[in-house]
Length: 133
Image (cartoon, rainbow, N blue to C red; front, side, top):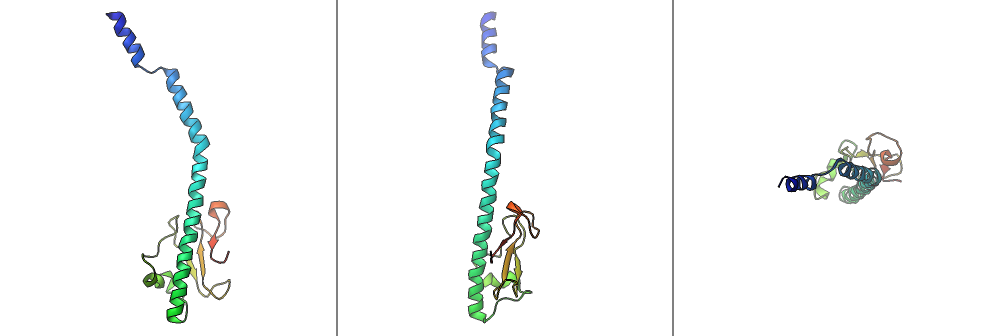
């Protein structure tokens, strides 16, 4: 009877080596797959910012057609609210979009998303996304 109880206990438990193997496999998975997953998330955020800015541009065209001018700097993107289905969203990194009129890059307003860092300039995921680029 005692021998059977010992066998059951030995078979029911997980050895330290088995636990270490599982932890190593999970760690390798996280190291190899994690960065690629975050890169895809960053690409999706950049794409989302571009789509939102295209939506703003369409609303700006409608605003201009109805009013004969673009919203002033003071009015900003909030003036587009009647032309959009929802309120003006923050960019995918939770920063406000920048609206400049008159724009510095032509006759139309400038729309800018400063990227992940929320600051002008930058590279990679921190690079500015603008409607004239």
